[in-house]
Length: 627
Image (cartoon, rainbow, N blue to C red):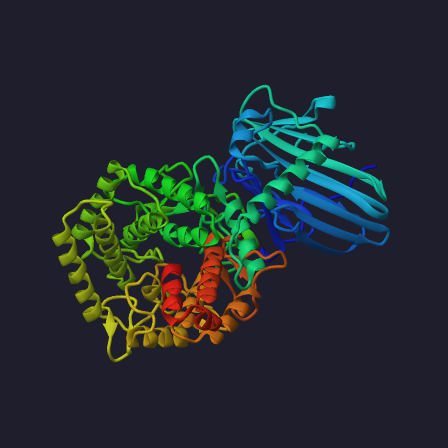
C-alpha cells in the first residue's frame, strides 16, 4: 500500500511535544506522532529532523494512524520512554518511542551504533492502517541527502560525516527524488512493527537488529531509567513532580562529560513571531550551583559531582576569567549565526545557532561557580591543589572586576550596567572562598578578600537598595526591580526573613507577578523589541522566597499552580504566557525543572509539622542545609 502522508504538517504548540533521549542527544516527539527535532550525534550538532523550525525544509519522522479520533500519551512510570496511544475508527495503536540507553561502561564495550531512535508500533485493538514517513534533512536542511536502498540491510544516507541507517520490519519505499521514505502498514490486533534510525561515525555501520532484539533494547532502557529513578531519596511532598523533573535533567545531561545543557532546542520563541529566539543547546555556568543543590538534595551526588567536574575542566580553558557558557566538552568558540533559509517556529525569526552571550561580561557567574564548589565540599568532596589555586585566582578576578558594569544575569544586549544581583554574587564568590579557606580547602589572601567582601556589601546596601521604594533594585541607583532580586535570600546574601528581603519580595511580586508566575523584568531596555512571557524558574524562586519568609501555605498554593503549567507529560518550557498558560521559549528547559526541584526541597524543609517533630532549631538547620 502507498502512504499519502504529505510532506508538511500543521504547527504544533510547543507544549504538545515530549522529549526522548540517550544522555547524548534528544528528540522532540509531537502529540501527532511526528518527531520534529533531532540533532546527531550531540545536542548541539546540526539537526537531521528540523520540522520544528520549518515544516517544509526541516524534515521529520512521522508515524500516523489513519482516521485518528484521539491520542493520549504518557511516560512509562519513572522512565523517559514515551508511549502514545492513538484511537481510530477501526482500532487502537500504541506507539512507543525511545533512544536506547545503557551505562557508560556497557556503551563502550558493546557492539552498537553511536545512537538509535527506536519506534515500536503495536496494534492493541481492531485493524488499523498506519502511515510512516521518514525525511532526514541534514545540517538544518542545508545539505542535500540521497537515501540508498541496501536491501535487507535497510536504507542508508550520509549526513555530516555520520552514516544514518533506517530500518523497518515493514515495507518502505523511496520517494521519487530519493530524499524520503514512506509506507503504509496494515496491522491487526497483537501485531507489532519497529522503525529504527541509527547513526554512527564509524564505517562500516553497526546495524541494530529488529524484532526480539529491538524489544530487548526497549526493556533494557526501561529498566535503566527505572533503576536511575529509584536512586532518588526524596520522600517529601510532590514526589512525582520532583522525580519527573530529575528524569528530565538526566536526559539533558551529556554522559561522556557530565555537562547539562540548558535545553535540547534552539530558536523556540519567547514571543511568537518575535526575534527573541536563542540557541540553548549549551551549558551555562550560572546553572551550576542551583543544579548541584537540586541533584545533591535528591541523592544524586554522582551526577552533581560530574557536572561540577565538567565545570572546573571547562573554566580552566578561560582562567582566570570565566566565560558565560560552554559546549558539552568545554569549547568556548560558539559564534552566533542566523539560518535565513528556515521559516522559524510559527514564523518567529531569525533562527539562530550559536550564542553571542559567550562574549558578554556577567559577573554573577563567579559567585555561582564558587557556591557550587562550596556545596561540593559540604557534600564531602575534596579539592586538589591545582583546583584550589584556580579558585583563588577566580577570587582575584572578582576583586579586580566587581566595580565594573556588566550585561548581567539576563544577558541584555543594550549595554553594560551596574546590576545589583551581579554585585551580590561577587559578594557570594568571596564569601564562599573565605568559607573554603576556613575549612582548610584553599589558601588565599584572606584579609584582602574580607575587605573587598565588606566593600561590596556596603555598595549594595547604599546604592542597590532604594529606600523610597523599600526594596532592593535591579541596578544601582535605580527604581526598577527584577526577578533576580529573589535570589538574594536563596544565596544567603540576605536573610529571607529580614525586613529588606520581605519588602523586596512584596515589591517584586507586586510589579512582576502574574497568576503565580513571574516576569524577569518589565519596561527594561534590553536591546530588543519588548514582549516575552513569564520566566518559568522565577516563579519557583518566588515560591522559595515566600516559604522562607514564613508563608508556607501561600508558597504551596503557588507551587501547585506552577506545576499546573507543565504539559501532559510533566515537562516545562523556559517561559509561559501567564494568561493562557501557553509554553514559550526553548523546551524542555532544564533551569525550570531545577527550580521545581529546589522549591520542593524548600517546601519540604519548611513544613510546619517538622517543627513539632524536630524542634524549631533543628527545623531551621534543615532549611539552612536545603539552601
